[in-house]
Length: 248
Image (cartoon, rainbow, N blue to C red; front, top):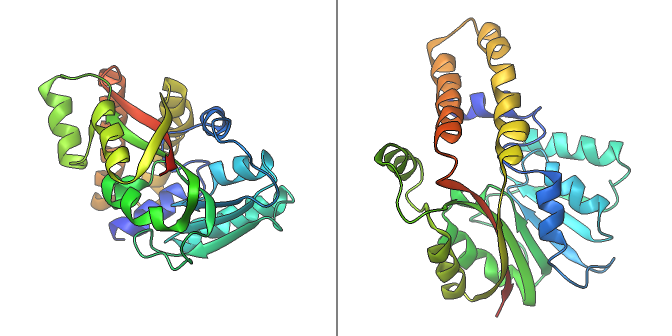
């Protein structure tokens, strides 16, 4: 199995494919005014749709959810059906850096734990054209919480994602890309451990067994364990931060 196949197989049944929580989604949602049945929300890199369902349940909006992986979209639509939300959620298989929507077609762009795939600045810049004037964008992005940090965690995250930066610098990027920052808040421990790492660690052994402890599967599972360990040891220095901004 290649890495992408492993990621799909391992994560598609998880509630979330990254740190987050229903509470965090709702907190961000409350910072965006004037949502009604005419509101159009675009959820980019939706995964299996944990946050998409929360958005649909707590607004009257029409939601378009995009992801490059059909397996994840399938899980999302299954949840939409179970929650009687099928008439308000449309799933589109698309690359987040190659969206094919009309310009100015959405009131809100949402993206939880996914913008890093194409880079924070690049994502904000590319997606801006799909937002109506004065539309809102809400994204969660890995950020440093302190100005200095131990070398071990510095190296780990710079190797994993070069655009990791302080909240202050992320806010500057938001302004630079043509938005006005509205609010931001840090995702808590529960978003990381209870909702993301714990389910991963609990599934690891069964996953290894299923693939007969193949080397590439062991490597994949080990990387997840290292990441969880890093968070446990260095959580004071970094987290996902939810940034809410308005198109200038």
